[in-house]
Every structure is written in C-alpha cells, then in structure tokens.
Amino acid sequence: MRSTVSEPLPASASAADWWRTGVVYQVYPRSFADSNGDGDGDLAGIIEHLDHLGPDGLGVDAIWLSPFYPSPWRDGGYDVSDHAAVDPRFGSEADFDRLVTAAHERGIRVVLDLVLNHTADEHPWFVASRASRTGPYADFYLWRDASGVDAGGRRRPPNNWRSFFSGPGWEWDEGRRQFYFHTFLVEQPELNWRAPALERAQFEMVRGWLERGVDGFRLDVFNAFLKDPELRSNPRRAGHSAWDRQRHVYDRDQPDLTLLLGRFRDLLDAWPGRMSVGELFDGPLERAVELTREPHLVFDWELLDQPWSAAQIGSAIDRREAAFGPERWPTLVLSNHDRPRHASRLAGSAGIDNSDAVAKAAAVLLLTLRGTPFLYYGEEIGGRDVDVPAAESVDPPASVGDPQFRWWDRSRCRTPMPWTGEPGAGFSDGPPWLRLAPDVATRNVAAQLMDPGSVMHCYRRLLAARRASPALHGGTFERLVTSDTDVLAWRRRSADEQAVVVLNCADRPAEVSVGSTPGHVARAVVGTHLDPPDVFAEASRLRLRPLEGTIAIGSVG
Ligand code: NOJ
Image (tube, rainbow, N blue to C red):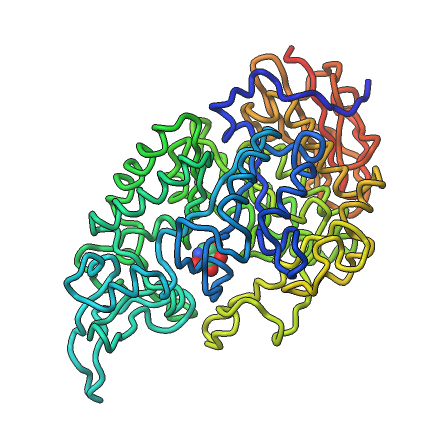
C-alpha cells in the first residue's frame, strides 16, 4: 500500500512540546520578501508569504527571524544598536505585532534572534559607556586599562585574546583611555555579563518581547557570554591562525554559564512553552551536549560539517547519537545564514551535478533523523549559493583582508528569495538590495508548486509525513545495517509505530538488503521520488534509484 501522508497535526504534538516535535524555518528578513518596492525585504513581506510556511504550504511550526533590529549593518544585522525595536527598514512596531498575530493564526510560532554577546558601537549603551568611567553604563562592556607599554612605546592590551574576525581582540579608546574587548568586529564591542545591571537590562528587553507574544529565542554565540573574571590570557597551542593558536579557555565557556542560562530559562519559563536554542560558538559536539537543557536546545556543527559521503555522514550521526544519548534532544541543521547553502556545498563535495537530487536526499536526513530540524529559507526550492562579485558583497567581515582569516563571503547564501519567474522574482518591484540568483526565472516557489517532482514538493511530502508520524517527530533512533556502504538506514520508533528510512547517498542505483526490518504492512511510504519503494515489503532486495530516499511507516509488531 502506498500513499502520501497529509494528516493534520496529531493531538500527541502537544503545544508545550512543539520545540521538540516541530520544525523551525529561518527567515533572513532582508532577503525574504519586500512589500513596498524599496528593494529590502520587510516584515509586511513576511506576512504576505506566511501561507507558504503554514498548514497549506510547508507546514512548519515556527519561524526564526534573523535580526530586524536597528543596526549599522556591518555584520548583516548581527550588530544591533537597539534590541527592543524594529528597524524602520523592516517596517513598524505595528507590523511586528501584526506578524506575530498572523503567524499565530496559522499555528506558526515566532522565534527571535537575540544577539546578547555584543552590540553595535552605535548602541546608546556603548555610547554612554565609552563617554564615562563612572556613569550607569560604565561597566556594561569589557573595559580594561593597558597592561603596560611594549619596547616600541605602544600600549599593551590587557591580555592575549584575539578577535575571531582576525586581529587583536582589544581596541584602544581615546575617550575613555582604556581598551575594550570585541570577539567580532571592532564595531561590535563585547558586553559584560558579569555586571548585574547589564543582566537586568537584557532580561528586561527579553521580557518585553515575551509580552508581545514571542514564542522563543535563538541565542547568538551564547557560550561566549561570560569571560574569565580575571581576564587571564589564553594558553597557547599549535594552529594555523592566530585564533587557532590559542586554547579558548578564558574568553568563553566559563563554568558559571549554566547558572546564567538557568536564570534566562527561569525568565522564559514564566511563559509556558517558550523555547530557546543556543548557537554554539567554535566549540565541539560535547560542549553542545553539556549545554542542552530542554527546552533549551543547542546547535552543534557535527552534521553540517560533513561532505556528502555516506561513511562520513553515518559516523557523524553515530557520534551525535552517542554524545546526546537518548535523554537529550539534538537539533538538525544543514544550512544557515553563515554557511554555504547545502545544495551547493554537498553536491560540490561529491562532484554531483544534479544539486536538486542531493537537496532532496539531504532533506531526508534533515527531516527524519532524531532532533528538531531548522530549515533555512530557500533550501526548500534547492536554492544554491550565488556568485556575488566582491564589489557587491554585503558581508564586511569577508573583506577584513587578513590572510590568516579566510572568512567565506556570506552574501552568497543570503540572496533574495525567488517567489515567481517575473522580473524581480516576486521578491521586490524595486532593485533588490542584493543580486538575485541567476536561475530565478526557473527556480522559484511558483514554478516548483506546479511540479510534483520539485524539491519543494519533496519537502512538503517529507514534512507532512514527519508531522503525522509520532515515530518520526518524537521516536527513538537506531541505525540499521545495509548491504551497501553508500546506503544509510535507520529506524525511528514510538510506542505504537515504527518508521524505517533508507537513503542511497550514491549517484548510482543500489540494490540492498536492510537488516532487521520485520515485514510489517506499511501505513505510508514517502520519499524523495513520487513512487518510493516500501522497505517493509522489500527489505531483502530493496532497489533504490540514484540519491533516492524512502521512508516506510508502519505499526510496531
Ligand atoms: C554569529 C552569527 O551567526 C554571525 O552571523 C555573526 O557574524 C556573529 N555571530 C557575530 O555577530
């Protein structure tokens, strides 16, 4: 029996559990949809396209909005100059409230991006902090005296900490006659989370968003919030860049971070069902696991860092499963606003021309492994990186120019969403702020809607199957052995249901046997192709086409 699954949200997906059973879709607001023809995406544009995301479209459970706050835009909006407001570029405060209401009407929750590690140097707190060593904002940032002068008479910074975006981490400020620290750009001064007044101010801002109906937060580089209280120098080690030549034991990941996180969670927990997800900055899988305390999830990079190789993806899955264990809940991410789009990255890593086929196969990983999937706008149409000439780059960190810091130009993965094949791709009636992909005339939402074989319909089928299946959205995970090393398989199991997933990662047909799949009658079979084979019926000789994934859902025997 074959069918595509299209059932409504099951009652088992209780509201309080949405962060675990659901799927989150990341919107980069400036590139999603422009409602007023000025070339910049805006909040009203997002409202206009909510049906693409809601139950009649992809059926995601939440949108994560990358920053839409006032910003000098030196770091793609991650340099915030007022965390409690909407940048007029994106619309009005009323537009934000309308967006929350319109999303909630469609059962979509709203997750905001909080950049709490640093601000823009134009933030009023920093303006006040650099103006006075004694005022109310004096200790909101990490200020320190010079530690002396070197042989050439130059002031020596307080310690050896570096900027991740290259160069020294300390910047001398003539006004205050002290150094301030910045992990990222000079224009992104680091906040001092050890100042109680700073914590109060941050929490006050967060409370304001909760009161406006926000359902959760993504915390930018959250493991860097706290620094060593004595600001000790990091120990040295061998490495390729100045950043890598330090063990970052004092400029992030402090022992009392979990206490701070606990206080943050206490604030959120006063509103039921509020989730948070922390972006692990430059740390290993084990650190992500330690900091996961549901409903606080943590992005780790183990899966995202793999090339398209069954062996490497398989062992990354095993490492993650072993590290998180059955009691902790991971995230699933293949693309975001910082990384090459995975249709390009994965297809390129395996030398496969058909990036759409890779995108569909990758969607099987993303939507059927154990964890909460986070999709990045445009991946549902197989969007690829765009060659943006250096002169058009909108990513200043990419042009820092330090040969030791080869930062990838993130303009390439942040280009406007193509909605139609018309001029402006349905994104904007004006000149877009960043160039469109060269293939928007054919690769767009409207075109893929007409094509049942498109990447977008594949996402819709897989998302519907995931939503309807307790095994897929909440079940246990077990890897299954197959007779072909290019073919991965796993089983998800809930109380009454099992789902068996088989994925041919090779660009050639495969005929495999899949270990220990008792021959249940499938309730549903869904996959990358429109007519996927049923592993329950054919476990001993399953034929898969190149890059084909199939998922059979049946009862537990
Ligand atoms: C992490 C964000 O994901 C990235 O886009 C940004 O550049 C850095 N934080 C610094 O703000």
